[in-house]
Structures are given as C-alpha cells and as structure tokens.
Image (tube, rainbow over all chains, first blue to last red; front, side):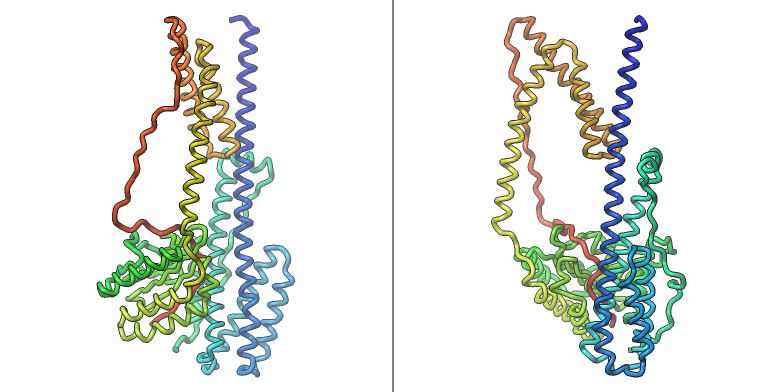
Length: 192
Length: 298
C-alpha cells in the first residue's frame, strides 16, 4: 500500500472518530438537560406544597382566634413568618422562609394543646388533618426532589460524562438537608 | 396527633440523609387482590365480599381501592410505610393516579388512608380524617370486620363520582393501533425490498454494514440512548446490515449466474403467540400518590 492510500485511510478514520464523538457529546448533553429539567419540575412540586400549607394557615388562625385571645404574640409571629415567605424570591430564600414558617406554626400548635376545648371543634379537627396532610406531602415531595437531585448529580459526576457536563456548565445541585435539631424529638404531651 | 404525623413526615424526608434505618420499609409481599389481609384479622366472608365489591368499583370507575392489613410496621412510621407501599404496588391507573390505600397495622394500633393525586379532590385530608375517626371506636373493640367494611364503604362513597371507565373507547384505541401497525409493516417491507435491491447489485457486503452502523449511531444520539445500549444497538444493526446484505447479494449473484430471476423477499411470516393470563390478580395500574390522606390510631 503506498503512502497516499494510507493517508486517505487514516483521514477517514479520523473523520469517523470525530463524528462518533460529536454524536456522543450531543446525546450526553440531551440527557443532562433532561435530568436538570426533572429536578426543576420536582422543585416546583415542593414549592406548591409549601404554598398549600401557606394558604391553610389563615383558616386555622381564624378558627382558633376566638378561643385563644390572649396569645397575641404567637399570631403576630406567625403573620411575620407568612410575610417573609411571600417575600422570598429564589428557591434558597423560599426554603429558609418555609423553615421559619414551620417553626412559627409549631409554636401555635403547641400552645393549642393548652385549650382542650378546641379538640372537639369540627372545623379545627378538619384543619388539623389538612395541616398534617400538608406536612406529609411536603416531606414526600422533598424526598422525591432529593431522588431527582441524586440521579442528576450522579450523571454529572460520572466519568466520562463529567467532561461534557463541565463543558456546558452543568453543576451538581443541592439536596434538602434535615434542619438542625430536627432529629431531636419534641417533647409534647399527646394524651388525648 | 399532629406531632406524630410530623415525625412520620420527617422520617420520609430524611430518607436520603442516610439516617440509620429507623424508617426501614420492608415490603409485605405482592398483592393477591384488592384486599390483602396479611395480618389475618378479617373473616373469610368479609374478605370475599369486599374483594368483589371493590373489583366491581374498579370495573365501573377505574379507581383502585386497596385494603391492606399488616401485623406490624417493622419499626417504620405508618406515613412512610403507606407511601412506600403505594408506590411499590402502583395503586390506581397510571395516567389518572386514582388510587386509595387503606392500611391497618394491628400491633402498632395505627391506620392510614393514603390518597392518590387524582382523588385528592374527592377525598381530601379532612374527610379521610373523619372516616378514620369513625373507624377508631370499632377498632378499639377489635371489630376489624366492621371497621374495615365501614371505612371501605365511606371511601367508595366519597370517590364514586370522580372517574368513569372508558367503555367502548378502549376498543376504538385498539383499532387505531392495529391500522397504524399494518401501515408501518407494509411501508417497512417496501423500504426493505428497495434497499435490498440496491445492496444486492454489488457483490461485496460491507455497504450493508456501514448503513447499519450509520443508522445505529444516528438513532442512539437522537434518542439519547444510554451509551452501552446505543453501542449494542449500533453493533446489532451493523451485524444485521452485514448479514442482510450478504444474503441478498449472494442470492442475487447466484441468481445471475444461473440466469434465474432473483426471488421476491417478502417480510417473514411472523408467528403470533398470544399469552394468556389465567386467574389470579393482574396487579395494579401504576398510579402514584403524593402523601395525601390521614392517619389515626386506636
């Protein structure tokens, strides 16, 4: 075989490799985009559950205000937390504000234990059930969000995809972490 | 009660914080029907009558109501257990998510109604909570049959109007798919014959392989198949292309040599093997839940 055909053959091989590499990069980019989108979608689910709880709180406050007239600081704290939540913009701010709302709400619920006559009020029972359901939904959506983030982070960090990810600027996303002190069981009297 | 629910919710959320297996879900098994009495607390008559009632409800509305009793939760929280079980079995239709799970844990003395996304409007948390509160006195007296019958009837009544079975719509859909399938087959056989004619003219058979390689590479990248899957598909198509071209080319050259017309390669006669599913439960529809519903204890 003379040099010209050898040169032509290696040129064809080079072109073939370039084409395959381009196809691979294209395919990987698409899958990274899809992973990113599913993380965003799942975050939207989490936010809609936050919103649901946010909307339930005024109903609860209205139905217990009559009985709990002297507990004004709790209601003010709750109102402040709600304002802060509606003022939050980025997902990180929203997550922090949601935690603040969570603790203000728990304070109200703990104080409600001091008013046993509230337990038999139908409306309050229904609202408490809705709030408990809301908390459960938030937890479920957070879990699924973490799953989506985990899958995406794995696909971004795995070799050799990490090169394509770096090339197009795909960075690992942050998961939900348990709030500090959340693992400490709150001491609440549940005798009913 | 809210506090306890909060702990259960926390357990679900911390699943990925690698917390020690406080929330260890173990599957109770595969479903044997809509009523799964793993704890064995329901009488036979109640089990069979509930099963047929729920099956009729599913047939008329496509909503799936599952009743499950377990002996204990293995230390798990009932909210976490119910959510995992709901997802594992996929209760409700996949598109509509119209499933409801009524779960009782006898030793833990707790129960939960888990509602799928699609039925959260018909069965909101407050109604699920009131259903549970009605069941609690009967459960305290260990009248499990009555409690479960009552709860199931309440759930059916609440969710009755939401969904309805498609009826003839399903048959029409099959017709559409059938027509589409036939059209694709005819088109494919024409294309195959045309490609075969072109490839046959050249005695060598690497062109077919190149074609297979090219199609495989394009398909892999455009459908973003997983890397190895894409490679396998490409390799498979390449081999198929080589083989196809080899067969077609050799037949052509042979025919030319013996001065006979090349044969007509119609699509192979496929043999249809239907699979029959005999008796037994076919499984749920693959619906999912978002954690809605209510819990209680007795």
